[in-house]
Image 1 (cartoon, rainbow, N blue to C red):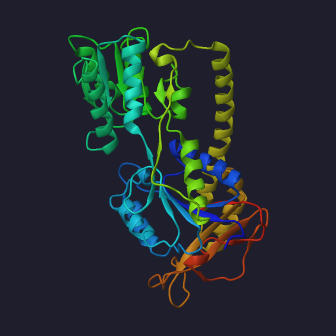
Image 2: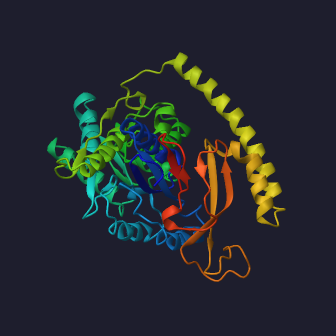
Image 3: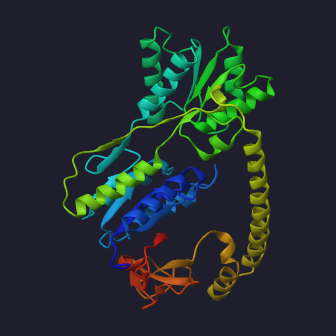
Length: 413
């Protein structure tokens, strides 16, 4: 065990992306409040559009993760982008002896915290109809094979019909939940015989791409066409105009997930699955707020400061990459990462584990045969001296090193 505090494992994919960082930050805050440790098992998934092989490697490591040390597990299944990986992890988690809480997708047999997606799109649509008195409202949906896109489209149609308006509004465009379809969407909506008064986008990223394309075509938002996003992302609130949207209520979801695990572990009545409803963000893109120039000027200053820091990090990373190209043994790798470690993120410790075969040979050795569920740290960076290095080779139950402090910790694997 890491220490005497309860320890909760979090399984997710691309947790370092800006979108999912908000969820991790909320989980860390809730863990601090409840006094528990968090161990993140983060899958990187597919890297880029063309290189998918790395994501397939992650199938191999799952069976070596030991779930016995954990008092609870939180499963964030929404972000996995390697086909079959989420299902493989669900299968693994079904064997856990501790409670498992799914927070972004309903999984039979798990405790579930469900986000009321339909309520969010209903709130946005009714806001445009009842508060702005729009009757010509378009929808930029996500790709319609995605479950979230289906839910949001169906609810949009329901609300429009309830208010005596055409089910598909002033036009329906299938987007991509990303930034690539904004130009096509703008051309579609602007080519309609009756131009929409407002367009609801099924997430903030598509709203940003659509508004950017509208600006190029001389269309003002919200003066000419009001636009909303969905999800309440950081990008959406930084973008100009700030997006009207709905929140994902990450703080509430994180609090409910950890408190539910604590209740179950202490045999308190937990009831059934929990539901979280989004809240409206009424901002500039629908006309509910005006631009605060003083506030925006300060954000520009902060952005320049972030860019200066980022340029410094990139310079160090380039230097690190050049040195890594000359690495011929593990000792050289350890020395390089120790020198550049501080500029790669807010970590106090970093460990790189390597598989060993039955003869103790590392997976990077030319004579290595096959994994047997044993590991050894080939890189050990512990700036604060918090972790105990008691043995060179160990099983999956000790994949996360033991910590000597009783202080609450957060670990990413």
